[in-house]
Length: 252
Image (cartoon, rainbow, N blue to C red):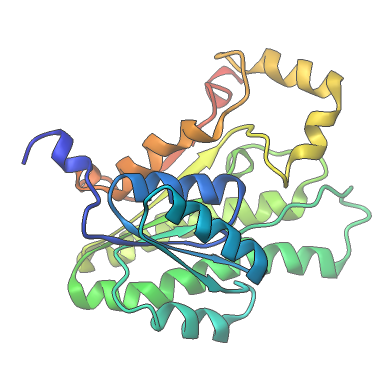
């Protein structure tokens, strides 16, 4: 197999949770461009239909499934019904900045349930089939808060730190079944979920000054990472968190 052939995902089925917009949609596009048949999930049928149509308009093989990852029974029904899944991208997530002294149980639970509990049960569901076939790849969308603290993001940071720990635990437990589990941790990328931060000019200037590459991430900057970790080119890589952050963590 040639070097470039090792990056091909031709013949693979990939699932991207929360794949209707932002980072999730960008990852779905990258996997499809590499040859995978992509299924994206989302909570809103209309948004899901729009995203699937956009993928198909680019010539990709794509379908959508309505899924709320906080509902474990729905996860099992949705993902088990898909048949063989070769690649799972646990991207569905939520974030809400709130001073820790003001955070209530409902906020904490909704973030943990979406970002961490949902990711585990999605992984567990597809891993059963992967284990039977002795192969598969799971990628969890971690965060800079998997490694550093951010004021006002105690619940989010806890969920993403937990996701990093989950990545390492599952990678060791499922390696014998041929399942690789890794994480991608984006740095600062402007999306619909994070747009509020970028409205603060002082914050923008200060944050850019802390990024060695001197700019915020663009969604296409994540394409190579997800294709690489999903592909045979990364067949000996598991239990790792790849920070795509413009050098932010290295400069602290």
